[in-house]
Amino acid sequence: MTFEEITEEEFRDFANKSPYKSFMQTPEIAKYREENDWTVYYLAAKYHGELRAASMLVAKPTFLGKSTFIAPGGPLLDLEDQALTEYYMKSLKKYIKSHNGYVLHISPYYELTERDRHGDKVENGFDHQNAVKNLRNLGFLELKDASQPKYMYALDIKGKTPDELMKDFKSNTRGHIRKAEKMGVKVRELKREELNIFKQITESTSKRREFEDKPLKYYEEMYDLFVPRGEAVFLVAEVEDGVSGDLRDDGSARSAEPRDDGREGACPENTISTLPLSAAMFMLYGDEVVYLFSGSDEKYMKDYNAQYELQWHMIRYASENHFKRYNFYGIHGLPKDGQTDGVYEFKKGFGGQVIEMIGTYELPIDHKFYQLKNFLKKIKKAR
View 1 (cartoon, helix red, strand yellow):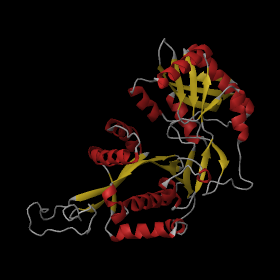
View 2 (view 1 turned 60 degrees about the vertical axis):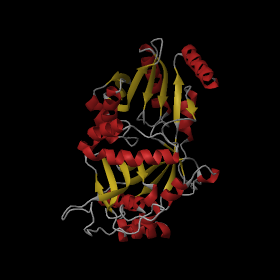
View 3 (view 1 turned 180 degrees about the vertical axis):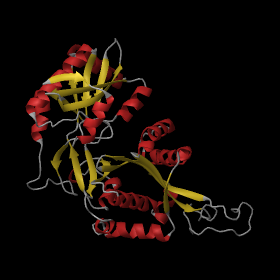
View 4 (view 1 turned 180 degrees about the horizontal axis):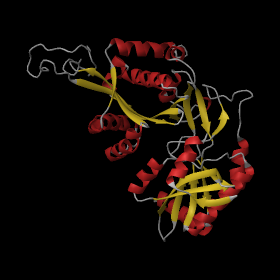
């Protein structure tokens, strides 16, 4: 077995074939990181010239010349293979140490335990605890506060038609979709110059639900990197405007019918104005579609249910284009632990199951500096 740097194209070819691939482990994410002052490395383990494990890593100096190394969505290898995991991780540690790294963060796209839609373990389902054991034996520590979700929610759509999938939706979810269609909600793809529409919706949603939204520049960069490759799409659900000038006192809509009644400001003939209701960004990578970011205009959510029509539009697309999984992405915790909220209930309405990932881990490499950094972090939090 040998450990070596590989080219971007070697890595891309390996990643495309890996069962652990993730859009986070792509040269496109590497380019995004490079544009934001990270250094990129492609490192692999080979056996008789054949790649057996690989990762895209990014590094950035913290202070005193020491760097944090991160494998977002990686590395790509079977973590239950003890010999391979031990060789690759020890080689990675040695390489990082030689490049002034003091810690390595990993978040493998690796499922841990098979669960049902309620979050309960599936009887006789898979349970990859040996992967966790192998990481811990190598000194990895699990991080509870991580940017990558520990729990996700997804639909197995392999070989299923849209009609077959809809039969597994909850009755109220089907009703919300029918209402959206009756109210004239349409879904279309946003062009790059229209990303401000997406940003306005996600920003207002982030304020309402108290999470930090990404800047417009992030969405523009992700668009430039992934949309031309057919690996991302930005969608908006909207109605023809005629609604915005005909609102109840509480701000909700009365009618989705467009009108031209001769009043000042009415749309000129053959000109259609639209009212954006909901928007979402999806990744289309490998065998799955990932519902990554979204938002909805709160004023119109109950009147139009556009968020349901948007999901149904993309689920149909995923089924018709032979994707194997539709991934709603993160939920806040296991339902049985009472840690989820309306977001989980919304996703569960479409069928599917809870996905438990192996989690995010860090490996201290320069132990003295690692302890100093954690000490300084505690002091900063205490202030």
